[in-house]
Image (tube, rainbow, N blue to C red):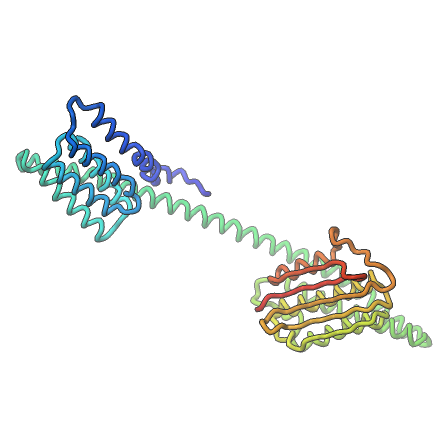
Length: 386
């Protein structure tokens, strides 16, 4: 909660009114039962306790409470005696609370009724000037007090809004600073990785030409490494573009809709060439997803298959399913049989690949699960409808 020094007075009436509401009935009982030197009439008790009870709901119904207090005051002028020592005070309090809490017609109605009742009580017992002065004082004091407290409350609210706006500005500046830092890191990342990956791609390309008599198997491996490195460079450039300018709308389509199916097939084919048996069910409707979800689908499949190759090894069997359900959710599931080795991943200590997949799915507003499944391992991600 934001605390503002200017709000102490602005909220003053709200601070001490609960105390007055609790004290009012006790004060009436104490005054009528102990403090006066004569026995009060039963009407005094009725009027006093009724006025004290009305005070309890003044915060929610200021106009009805004021009208009720004025009615009790008018009744006290005719049938009460001792109660007139505190009924005007309750009416003054009710008027101040009405000024503090309401504007427009309710305020003018309450103020007019207050002047009429107070005037009825003042004019029969004093000359016109004195009675007018009494009515003016009895009306002006609670009106000025209510207006003052209302103004202070407005100042306190404005101060809170300024503090909130300042906090929003600070958060915005922090985000801007982080964005700048992210752009710097992106440039450094690009310079570092692009240099090494480009060097590897170049060396593999040279090797393909300087060793012309190599076996077809080795040539195929070199071609695959060269293609993978070239694709990695392209992905790196596109990712760096997003890191440098994350606020440019949707940004560059990291995976074009027309290329998603091809990229998924390439990911599956790479693992097949490594000796993993892959049964792939790829829904063509995934190309209709937005750019963020397309990228998540591709990265989950790539990382999941990489984990299968790394931990289950060649000879493993894996089922890949990418499906857009009827309700619009997208399901990605990768299940392997463990291959010749039992699973070595520990769900309680996930590696960077699993953490990265989980973060991607969370950012896309989905759910992610990964863990042992029979002898193998299962990765399942569900992306909510767009």
